[in-house]
Amino acid sequence: MSQNPLTQAQTQLDQVAEILAKEYTDRSADFKTALQKLHEPQHLHEGSIEITRDSGKKQSFQAFRSQHNNAIGPYKGGIRFHPGVTREEVMALSMWMTWKCSVVGIPYGGGKGGIIVDPHELSPAEIQELSRAYVQFLGQAIGPWRDIPAPDVNTTPEIMAWMADEWQQLHGSSAVNPLASFTGKPIELGGSEGRGEATGLGGVYVLQQLAQQMSWKRPQDVTIAIQGFGNVGYWFAHHADLLGYKVVAVSDSKQAIYVPTGLNPEKTLACKRETGSLSECRCTERSCSSEHGEILTNEQLLELDVDVLVPAALENVITTENAGRIKASVIIEMANGPISPEAEEQLHQQNILVVPDVLANAGGVSTSYFEWIQNLSGQVWSRDEVLAKLEPLMVRAFDAVWKRQQVLDGKTMRVAAYSLAVKRVIDAMLLRGS
Ligand code: NAD
View 1: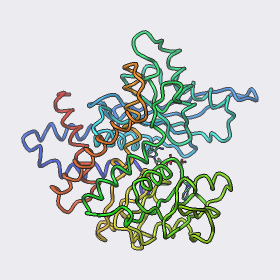
View 2: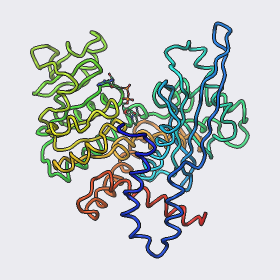
View 3: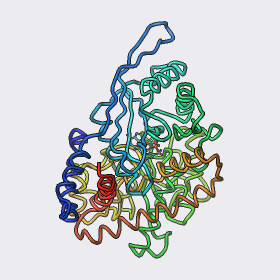
View 4: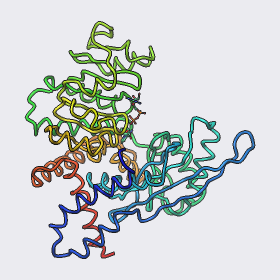
């Protein structure tokens, strides 16, 4: 990111506030007070947690949990284990989670947690101890009606299982199902069917809505390049392909493959697992062969002449350095923050439509919400039941943002999404009167 992420998040809030101020002229003072509060998280938990390494030595790690705003509902957001975690990053990410939950209309506020650690340097037993220590450190601050964490960078369903178990040991299970204290858990321990594919599929629901708005008649005429072929990138490719869209390029951290006639995501994934390299896997409908396509760099993938570009790997991959060379007419941000603010301005000038991450990748947190409902109500839904709830939720969110953008003529879809989200949160704060 080009600036401190917290400053960036606050700047975005200020930009939206200028637009929203017109809608609160009769409650201007209350609006300003609410806005001021939204610049900072309501709570920031920060401290040092200690584990005993396998060697017997004690080691401390800095841990954070930022709880941005709970006007609409309990805090919700992931926990990351990464050496680059900072206080400001966690605070900014919690603010963005508030907007993401609000955009899709799920009853949560934003939270985010992190520990400064390189988990690759710890054994599984040490990671488990660290996970449990983190839950002890947060004590009463998290729980099914307060703050419901989930996986994020380098945290897994297994880690959520350990954390939920620790939460139950600390707080008991008399009032509410303790498994509702975390989402993203393994299916066997209260996790939800459909969660794995939900983020990618949610993005494809957005693609379908876009196709209507852009009057794209036939999916087979719409070409798509996807940066990243992990959880989100693969499932986006899979579901887009099922609907007949032409996925022509995907990439991993090493290289990209470009198959102009359209690649087969399942065969490509199977081939990558078998050979360990995407370059061997230029797969068409019938077979995988190096004759079918080209090997490109990740940078070249971003600049392909396609209809839809889907960054689904890292943040900040489109900057002012390469924005001028982007040829896609639409970018669907499946990764968090793949476009720098300056580059987005430039893309807007180039008439490239950007569907922002807070909308495009919200299928993940929405399905976490479904997991929480199942845990609280003692129900277990099938994959079909989960997806039948996800689709209308994403479609409604897209339509609301699209309409808002029409009203805010000349603004980006991100500004439209944020203004909708911030307005909903401010309305909730004003209704509470606190
Ligand atoms: P993942 O680890 O499963 O996959 C990441 C992919 O990116 C892999 O294919 C990897 O090879 C590729 N990659 C890594 N370094 C790269 C590089 N330098 N250049 C190009 N590709 C590179 O992660 P994921 O869960 O698919 O998440 C991808 C993005 O989506 C992240 O920004 C994440 O924050 C965001 N996201 C994920 C979810 C979710 O439910 N998984 C939800 C919301 C947002």
